[in-house]
Length: 272
Image (cartoon, rainbow, N blue to C red; front, side):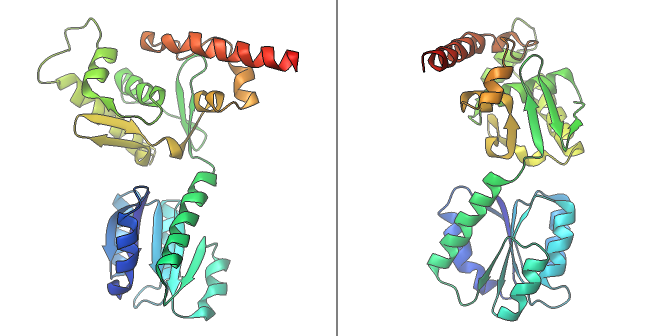
């Protein structure tokens, strides 16, 4: 969860920073004493979780929160304040939580656990459809990819369910039998850029992670019929008709397992 800390007394945020470092779900991507600097950062970077002091000079935390939420509607907002009188106003503007100074480690753990729970419950902006042909939607809009290879790379990441996909696996799947398996990996790099540009067009770049030699999807941020199927959700199981990412040969191996899973579930329903 990409996290920013904003407090004109940054010393107050050190405990949060230390605790976030112990929890891999949280990545502190910015620390700011000036709310305007935080807003400038949010204009150009993904923000999943914002921990904001309320009483700050220039722009108070509630004003900053409303501006950040305009940019990132699903952002989780937690206010930190030494003044209980602000609590009602904070809740009126639909803050997710308020924690009061002075706080201790238990308070911090509570805040971070609540943030994780809130993120898991939010309606996902990004949805993937894999039964039949592969499609992606953001905010109910059909996504038009910059290239067919970029779309296929996205499908491969979805298929791998959040696990790292290596450069070797990507080249093997996307360029099987092709002369594009060159030592400089030009096609791979171009496809990564095309996918990132596509996601940027739809302000959905937060779902994709690229690391050295690997990339992956942030599974917790998306909805997908394939994931629902393996989670045992009846609607997804009933909708699966034996077709899965039909345009990609590398996905065919999953179909047998899915058919067997559905057959087993239907059999158990009959005998019970």
